[in-house]
Structure formats: structure tokens, C-alpha cells
Image (tube, rainbow, N blue to C red):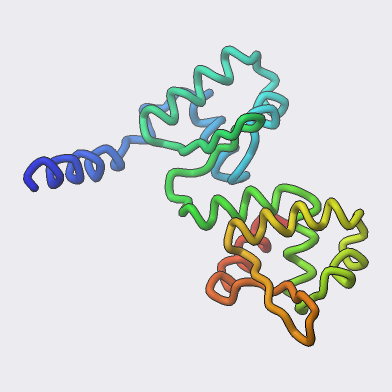
Amino acid sequence: MAILESVTQNKQMKKSYDFSTLSSRESLFLNLINQNPGIRYLELKSLTGLSNGVVSYYLHQLESNGFIKSVKTPRVSCFYPLSSSELSQKIFRRSRQITPKKILLALIQKNHSFTTLVKEVQKAPSTVSTYASKLIEDNLVFTEYKNSKKIFKINPEFFDQLIYTLKIST
């Protein structure tokens, strides 16, 4: 138990940093990430005009010093402020993608069957199906059956946070 308390105290101590010690480039990256939660590596590279190695170095420094979090998938790395919850990260990640954002915005307005969702989003059924499945997997959307029709709905547990986060990212 003492070990667990020690680890917890170290983590809490690690979170209080002196931002004045950051270099101008570290501050640049930190500001870009704070202003654009879920920003991708290539977007940061493009916005800063810096080379791969330099971008990688500063992102690694910020993450290892506890200023930012990264979420890496096989093809994409996204960066978030340290204060972002896992739920916020999911919402920001999906809201930075065109089709999932359209799906979420359509479902905030009203519940949809698959057919009406495809019409609303104006994408191929396979595309809507793929992204709707990801949103369900993220627990942001769920389905229920009404008169033997599958109806897509926003998870009411996250409705307010979803609206707030989408408003920020728009």
C-alpha cells in the first residue's frame, strides 16, 4: 500500500510544472496542442514548418515531461493537452474527422435510422456504416430498435459534453 501511495504522490508532484522553463519552440507546440486538441503529427509539422526530427524531438520532450498526452494508432498520432479526459480525446478525435463530425451533428439534432442518416450525411452507406460503428465503439452513439428499424442516438450520458466539445472544435 505504501508503494501505491508513493507512486500516486509522485504522479501528483509531476503534474505541477513551471511553464516558464519551456523553450520558445516547446511553448509553440504546447499552444498549438492546447488550441487544437487532437491535432495530428503531420498537422503540427505543417503548421510549424519544422522537419520531422525537430517536431518529433519537441513532442517527445513535452510528453515525457508531462505537458501533453499522445494517442498513437498504427497510422496516426494525435496530441492532447494533459488535462483532456479520455472521453474528450474520443470526441476531439472524431470531431476532427469530417464524416464522424457530420454524423454526430446530425444525431444531436434528432435520432436517425440508417437510411435517413446516410441521406443527412451525404456519404456512401459503407462510409456511414464504418464511422457509425466507430462512434458506437467509442460509446458516443448507441442503437436501439423501433418497429424493427435500427435507430441511431447520441449516448445521453455524454450529450452535454459532446455538444460542448463540438462547439469548441467548430
